[in-house]
Amino acid sequence: MQTVYNIKPSTSMAVFIAVLYLLCAALIGLYLSPWLAVSGCLVLGIAMVRIGAYHFGDISVGRIVLQPQGEWILYDRKGRYWTAEIESSSVITPWIMVLNFRTGAQSHKYLVLLWDNLESQSRRSLRIQLKSSHVLCLKRLKHRHIR
Image (tube, rainbow, N blue to C red; front, side, top):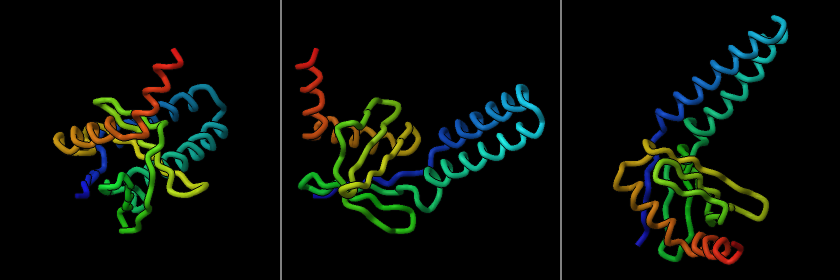
């Protein structure tokens, strides 16, 4: 039986991006000449728009589905999808999950999930599923043998 996780845009991530932008813009304005400050803020603004689009726009991942055989399917908000495998470099904590997926030979997607991206029961279920994942269990075993 497949498990579906619907991902909502994170308010926390939006606030973090806005605060980061304002802080960087203020620091650039304080330490550079006016024309460098304006161009720095412009470049920073373009970068923040790209980050925002990736996390909140149509190209952001809106749903992930775990198939019974362990394969993941990632759906963006437009309905496009990719089959993927979870990478061992993923990080899972109670507050944040950074999921790295391999979607092809040279293609990767990453997904940052904060505490407000999923309902609490879905978040808990996903964490348990990921912690019991074969790939991530092998990663933990490697770290135990290295130390």
